[in-house]
Length: 376
Image (tube, rainbow, N blue to C red; front, side):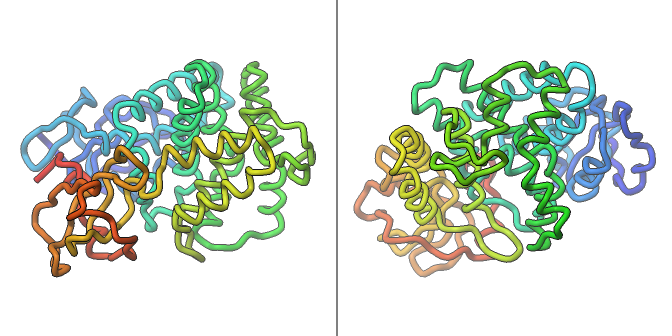
C-alpha cells in the first residue's frame, strides 16, 4: 500500500472537490476515504492536525492500515471520522439538499451510538485537551449522544429521537469557531459575546433558509438557551418545548464535564448533582435530568477509579447498577502500569470501587482500543 506524508501532497487537496486519495493518521487509521469532499479551511486544519498520510491506493473506506496489514475500522476510528464529517455537513447548510444530508448523518450517528453506547460515553468523558480548537464540533456530537440516550430512556419514539439529534447537531452552527476559540483562549471579545447571545436565532434562521420545515426541530434550536422560569435568551421565554428543555440540559451538562484551557472538566458526580438540583423545580425537567444521570451513572465509562485490590482502573462499561461498572485495570496493586489491561467487575468485593483517581498523564496514553480489548 503506497503511503505518502500529507504535508507533501496537501496542495493536491482542493476545497469542494473529491479527495484523490484516502487520508490516514500517523497510525494508519483512515480518517477520510477517497472521493470524500473537503469543503472548508476548518476541515483542512483537521487534516493537518490528524491526517498526516495520503493513501492513493485506498478506495473502499472500509479498512485502515496498521503497519503493512489492513484491518477493519474500529468504532473508535468511526467516531474520530465524525468530527470532519460534521464540519463538512455544517459548512454545507446553504447548499441545496441540506435537510436530507443532515437526516442521513443523524441516522448514521445514531447507529454508531447504538452499536456500543459505552464507547460513545467514554469518548465524551475522555476528550482530548490538545484539540480544543475543535470543541464546537465535538460538543455538538457529544450533546447528540446525550440526547439520544436520554430520550430513549424517557421512552420517546425513534422518529422524535432522531429529530432531537438533528437539533443537537445544528443548535450551534453559527458559533462553532467561536466555541473553539473560547475553549482554547478562555476569553471572548464583545463581538463574540454578541454572536453567542444571537446564535439560537441565527441557527434557527439559517436552518429555515436551508429548507428545514420541521417545527419541533426549529423550536428546539431556537429555545435551547431559554429557561423554565424565564431569564434565558434570546426571548426570555418561560414557555419552553420539551425537546428544547432536554437539549438545553444536555448542552449544559456536557459543557460542564468538558475541559477548557482555563479550567479542567467538572467531575461528573458534581455535574449530575447540579443538573438534578436545577431541574427539581420543574416536573418535566426532573424526569429528563434523571434520564441523563441514569444513562451516565455514578462512574461512567472514562472515569479513573481506585479499586479495593489496590489497582487503578478505567471504567469501560456501565454495570447492573450505577455503582458497579466494569473497569479495566491499568496498574497493579502497587501502582505500577501493566502491559495488558485486565477487566474487573466492580460488583465483586475484591474489586469494588473505593473512589475516583486524579487523571495521570502516563495512564491517559493507554490506547482506548486496548482498554476495550480491540488491540493487544
